[in-house]
Length: 215
Image (cartoon, rainbow, N blue to C red):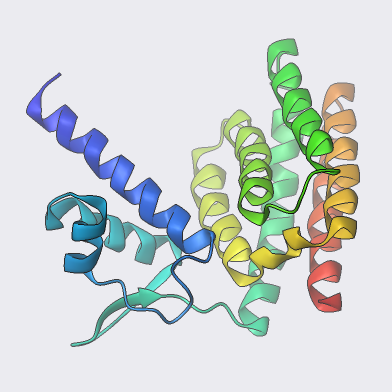
């Protein structure tokens, strides 16, 4: 592999690790993203950390202030309502497009994610694990849409939604409801009917908004 290729893989790995630290709550909203400290923690140079922080700013997971560096973003109530309103529309668009593109192997993959979520219902709470499965589920569908603009924007919106209240996954009831809604999305995708898939995906995001309001 070329030096550039190795550097690219390192950058992706560093971004992935810091992003997970943010989404898991290890790095909390408002906490400074110190490039030297993160580089030391991860055992890498400052350059890939600096690039990762810039990517987090683009994703809406971090903010930058003049002369103050970057810090983990804080998503407030007004922002999350805006995020989910747009996400509902784009999730619906992604699901409608995916309904005509998914193969049997793709549907099997989604079924495996659903099975993993179901198997976890009776296990002890692990918000990071459950949030990651949720992200995997939605990422698979949006990638299957074939619309790069939708893919890019949904990646940012979904990350911000998880940043707002990752503790939703600490509730057994919320986990069961989300699983039920995921099943409905998969059933609609299996039908191959774009409008059914759109409706199921939009209903899921509306349900998420309702659960956030209850919290």
